Length: 501
Ligand code: AHR
Image (cartoon, rainbow, N blue to C red):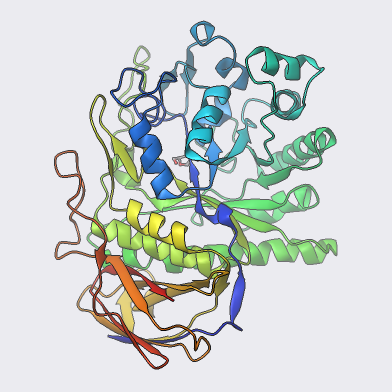
């Protein structure tokens, strides 16, 4: 197939917010325990955090990190995770049918964030809790001193406030699986009260209200409208969550998952702007796409229902998907969709980070390694700065079962302050390569093209404990620039980044 693209500095989507490259760390399975925290591991520091994992997280290039859940947060008491580590309660984690030891809590997690260089985005529990506990937590994290909670923080070893500005008002409250699941009306009223009260403590805060946990939820659309009718003046963001997987061997539809994500974003934007019109508001709500990834959800569902009342394991192996080249190409496609909506999606979190549907895997006492999906994320996060450009694309199509005819090639581009342009390309064609030409007339100063990407003769190749470097990014030497035209051949089922300087 063929595709012709045009880039021009005047065609802009918007500024790229660095929060677009956020991650998500939930107390779930082996994410915290035996993942990022493993005292006794050869690379662990005195704090118990594995330095090999710290290095990989830094290399991945995640920015803001959402914590501590996820479904976990809806039955979580934040106080359990502060104070002397040896005295912390062990609790039932109802979301993941596990025992939460609370060995790692707020202080430890912030110490780890300081090592990896991330911004904390904190979720409050609106499943089993409400205004008083959210206010207590905020007093603990953000008030300098002189009150019970702030002095408790200082006594627990942290003189300076955590200074958290991004707050999630609960998690997936539309989902029947959520502890404390509510109707849109009930949740909207509660979220508004919590945000208003928290803002009285700290007027620097930014709030994310829960949107739908998926575009396929029966309440999708109506949920967003009702929740925003209650909270429009109180919040900055509404969340979107989406997970994709290949089902029934339908690789074509899976690779085109970005088409679904784009529709989801555009529908939430339309709904938010509708509420804006009804309210005659001058404000625009942004999207925090704070859970997105490939997740083989159906494989996990098949493991459900195998627990009994005495069986509450600590850090069981849960949701440990092994990702393939096709998964990485899909993740790359989802990143392209996020960049193409950078005007309204100004926060996002890859879900999750270590061991649990994660780009980074670890073995207790053993190595840590990069999954295939690590690469499109790190290559995009490192490069996509400055302004997202609106790429004009004239491409051949592929026919997919789920989305009908879609462009065979998806593309996004950014230009940074130094004038370097990065082009991100996905070839969704499962039958052959794509020949791409790019018109750069608007960027006459660009003279070199360097391309790197992910593809393989076997789209199901993966990195594993025994073969951790089976899949790595490779240079695409077909990229060339002549006059104002860039030419490149994209292998079938591939994701590519071209740097134009
Ligand atoms: O990321 C795994 C789970 O997916 C999260 O806990 C929840 O918010 C979502 O349903």
